[in-house]
Length: 407
Ligand code: SF4
Image (cartoon, rainbow, N blue to C red; front, side, top):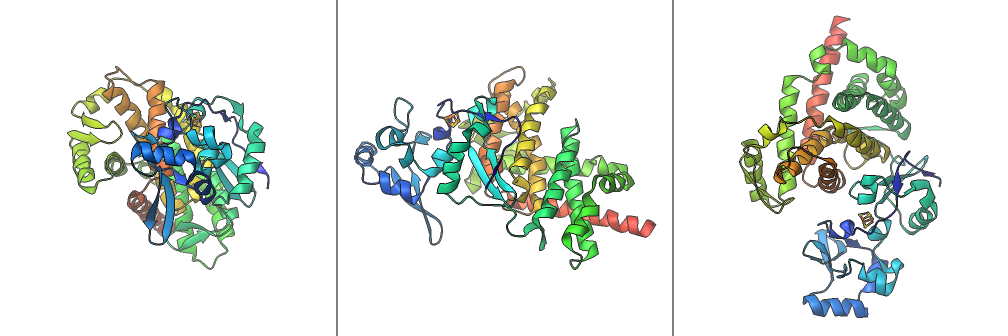
């Protein structure tokens, strides 16, 4: 199956070891477990740390998975020379597949395998190294070895029980790409949500007996979308105050969930973010006083970040973020929230470091938080996105009804 590469993206590992210190659990596939478990290296580390360097976890009943032990925020196999000791002593092929494929995110589709990358990787963030198509040999090996989760081989969930075909999904994705091509990224993201909600609204009103692709086609064609957008009350198309408040509330909830996995601390943090109090932050591993944060944010213009955010958001759409896991409508909501979240963390990193204003390093640090905790592993945040999706679809349906009554 052919690979589909994103335009302009480069990568070559700079051995910064950030991915080995990502404060995430590293899954070990059975083949790697077999090679490492019981090796001399395994026994040596077990003795040194007083516990096995790999252990079994059961995140869901009956779903056993092996993980590597983390020590001081890093993988226990990372040695004092900042090298992977599995690679060093047992060979590159003995490493867990997740480590070997990072930062690639392979996504099989009916049109070919989409080659995405993780923006947690420093080389990806800096866009440094060879163009991705030059990694084709390595990618072919990875694609053969592992069955990656695909998109489009089965109907894709759009909203509630509604599903769409791969063809309809591609129409929606084209609509999203065209919405995101305008200079105002926030408005572009808003239009992605409006466009997706319009598709849902039209499908719901047309009934599910209409062939989905043809029902969706007129809904999201540029011309029709434009016409419908123009026919809508300006305040809705321009994001009204109610939505601004809703966005702020969702942002507070998402940051609260990101800053602690402990439900009690998460609750306290959410309140502290709301009232701009003191947050017990997992990201910064310390308490942060937010009293002067809003004041700090008014003192600079960081619009220079927009091309960086755009590169990331375009890449998320390219790597099929809209069609994965949740419904397309819920994913459009998550995509929309990625922007305020990136801006929040860019500014928070600068604030905590007592800078006068954020710089490029803070953009990269914001990518780290958002890519790791929000776009790749957004555990516990789905209710936010589904609620936002419901609010949107309900509003669009009301407007479609009004339009019908008026015509
Ligand atoms: S984060 Fe990227 S550049 Fe750094 S070690 Fe991992 S793959 Fe290499």
